[in-house]
Length: 76
Image (cartoon, rainbow, N blue to C red; front, side, top):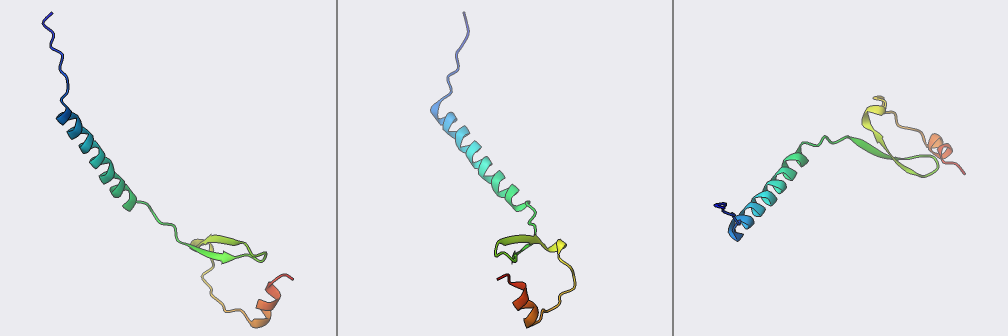
């Protein structure tokens, strides 16, 4: 019968709530910096749709196409 019921005070509740919210926001900023960015290039296909292609999938040889190749590339 000697049990004491401890009621948390409002100040302690607000302090704990503020500390939890601040720790969550700090964790968000720490984890955002660790995300690995995948390097992609946006390109158009022959039918006109936009796709993202990984740079690793592209060949290292970069050759400029001729005007005739460019005109034949577009489907009519």
